[in-house]
Length: 105
Length: 153
Image 1 (cartoon, rainbow over the protein chains, first blue to last red):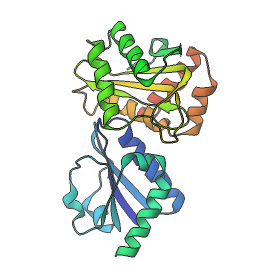
Image 2: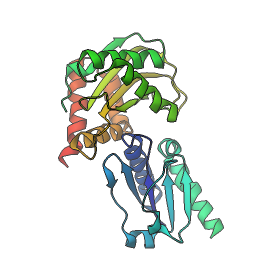
Image 3: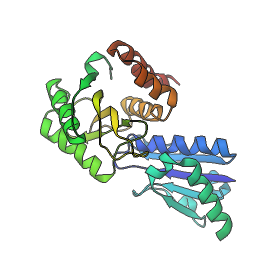
Image 4: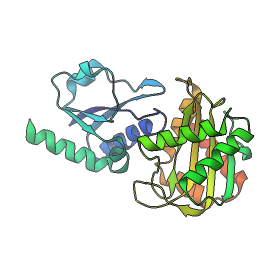
């Protein structure tokens, strides 16, 4: 399972990198290929390329903020999850998203 | 961005989240990190209103990103009492890393250091080191190593 995503928080300082790290660590643990782009005060960090977007099974938007570059993911299932939940329970978030995508598509 | 004993406030006796944020804002003004104590306090509250910065295991990472901040700074506060704060594990807070950032600060080495510190707060080793070590000198070493460490990668 290949998962790409974007994390973003109000100030773009702390929670953006925290969520990215949490989700990527959870991905390693669960055996999913997870890459999270951070959209915070550093601009786009760990940017997802069009090729990576194309190869992904779905897109996880770990934010309730506006994010940029969504056109990369056209036609892909997109799931939006509160960023705090992604930091607090990243494994549960990934599992639930995978489940939802598998059932829906 | 240096992290020294001046960036550490131990044995604080705040009774609430608001009181603690006021202590930090006052100290930041005293240290000439910000122009206005009041604007700094309001910036903290503004960010908390968007969503709480409480984490887990007694930690929180409030931040003020505002014009009033002159120099990107981290202030670590250890409070004597556990104070009520909306956190991921519904536990009260005792260890606070306050981030103060000028509004215009974009994509700099300072932001990378703050990011490194924030992600370190998800590691049990780092949190345990902060809880275990009670002297300011030890805390300076632990915290600044973490901020500089990722920077060198």
